[in-house]
Image 1 (cartoon, chains in turn green, cyan):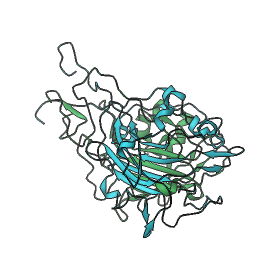
Image 2: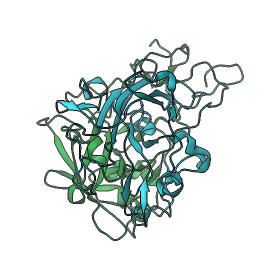
Image 3: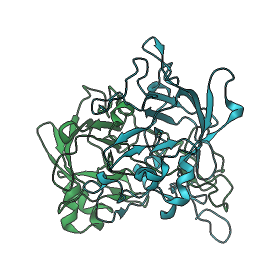
Image 4: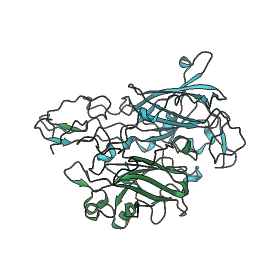
Length: 219
Length: 246
C-alpha cells in the first residue's frame, strides 16, 4: 500500500524488529513465547462510577467550535425498555480523513486540530452525547475499506464487563453495504448499529436487551 | 520508508480464556438481569479501530491526584495505605504511560455520591478520586485510606467487601479495563456476588497482597497489586519457508 509512515503497526519487508519506546508493541523477537501472565479480571463500574469517570471535557471527542462538529446521541435502555441513567458510554473513532489520534496509525496520527477521537459521556436520563466529527472510511487491513464507524464501550452497574458495539451512519449506505463487519450481520440486526441523521448530528439508541437488542461484539 | 512494500500488519490482542475472565452477567448479582445482553456477542476481528486507542497521559492528571488523603485542606480519616504495583500486558511487558483512574468509598464505607445515602459519615477531606499515569516501567502508586465495607440491597444483609475501583487505558481500545481491587483475607468475600462472579481460578488476581517491606514506618501500610492487560500475539506477521515476511 506504500504508506508514508513511521508506525509501529506497519512492517516493511526489510524492517528490523525493534520496538519504538512508548508505542504499542509488535513482534519483539520472542516469536514463539506464549503469553506468560493471565489478565486481571474485569468488574462492574457499580453505581458510583461518576466519581472516577467524570471529565469536564469528557464529551468532547473534538474541541468545541471545530468546523463540522456533530453530536452523537442516543438513549441506553434495559430489558424492560427503561432508560439506564447511570451508565458511561465511551467512543473511539477516526477523524474525517480516516486517521486515528494515535501513534500507531500507519498513515500518521490524525492531524485534525483539536481532534481527540475519544469521547466519554454519562447517561443522565438514559442519554449519552458526544461532540465529534463524522469519521472517514478506515482501511480494513486487507486492501479494502471499512465504512465510517465509531467503536463504543458501555459501562454500567449490572454489567460485570464492558459491552462493545459500533455506530455506523445511515447516510453512508454504499459504504455500509461493503463494510466487512456490517455486511456479515443478518439484515434485520444491522439496523441496530446504524445512526440516523438529526438536526445536530446523529442518533442511535443502545438496547442492552429485548427484541431490538443492539449487536454487541466480542473484541 | 524506502521503496519496499508496506503491509498493514496489525497486532492481535489475545483474548483471555472464559475460565479466567469475568462474564458480563452473573445470577447472584441482581442488576445484571435486565442489563446484561442476552445474545451471544459477535466476534469482531481486530482492525485499526481496535488496535489503536486514546492517548491519555499526564495532561489528564494534576499534582496531588495520586494522594487521596489530602483533600480540601485537610487529612482524610482512616487507615493510611499505599497501593502500588505495575501495569503489564499478558506477555509480561510493562505498559508505560497508562492512565489509571481510581474511585472508592471512605474509611466508613460511604461514597461521596448523591445516590449513596446509607447512614455512615462522609469525610470532608476525602473525595475518593485518584488519577495517575504509569512510569516508563509500568509502575503506579497511590496514597489513600483503606475503604470500609458497606451494605447494599442485592440480597438480605449483603455487604460489599472493601475494594477500590480501577479504570485503565492501555494503548489500544481492546485493552480497556475497568475492575475492582480487593484486600487480602476479607471475610466478606464468601457472600459477595460481584467478587464471586469472577471465575474461581481468576479471583486471586483481583486481590492485592500486603507488603510489609513497602510500608512506610510510622506512616502507612502498603498493598501491592499488579494489573495485567491483554497482550498482543507474539507473531504478528507470517513468514514463508525462506523466513521472509509474507
